[in-house]
Length: 151
Image (cartoon, rainbow, N blue to C red; front, side):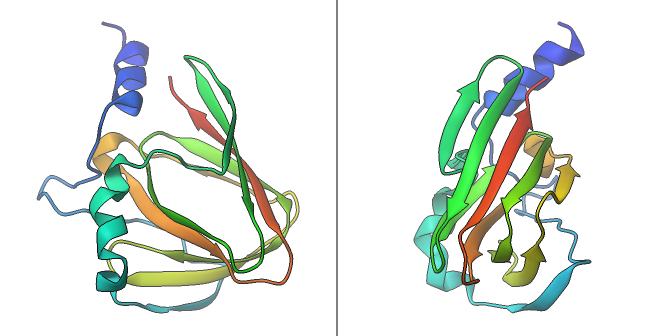
């Protein structure tokens, strides 16, 4: 089977986002952080228990085919997207800037400002899944376009 087909299957399979040791891990670039800290994951225990199965990485799925999925992420001030898993490489672009807070499964969080047109490419697989939530902690709507690369 060509590598492309294998990767497509992996991206659509049920995954757990666990490392070889079996622990769920998160890797995030906090270089642009305006604040960092910790929280008690027990406050989100029910949600975290199913996060690896939540592959809805946006608010609205705009397009899906065998190569890509295009999502809109739109959060009003104070609104929060639940914990979810990124199991494929993807990129996002900010189309309405604002401030967001991301929590990670290891009990850490980061707050950062997102700027108009800012784009970031992230590489993940089912074995290196990123599991996090996103909360708009700013005063304006926060909006991204996220494109998952399936092959």
